[in-house]
Length: 102
Image 1: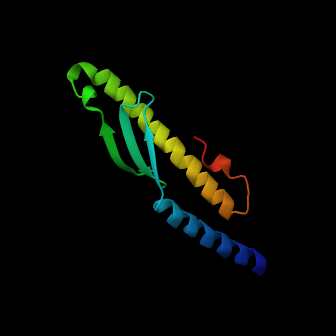
Image 2: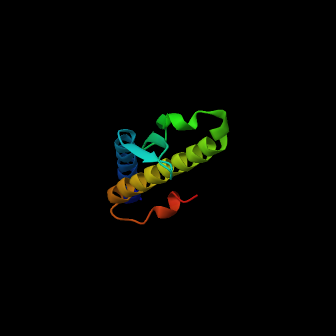
Image 3: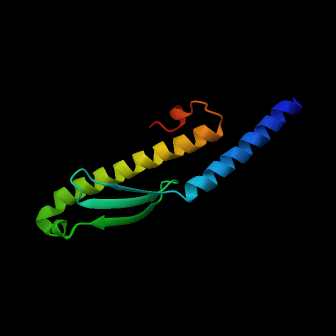
């Protein structure tokens, strides 16, 4: 039983270490058309969104919405891959991919 507690404490330390590492990770991504650029942290918090000026007119509303959706999804996907890689390496190579699937 004591061994199990030690393992749990060690796993908790590794999880905290992974969280700290992810908080310092910044990922840049963009929409498929390259007109929207997004920076997101490893904790999946959006830091910035840069919109190409050509999308700022009312007639481009639909394209802007699509580009924002694509860019945010791409940024989140990259952040999830980064998180999975860091956590997996700290967990001794265990396959933790199912924890990040939506």
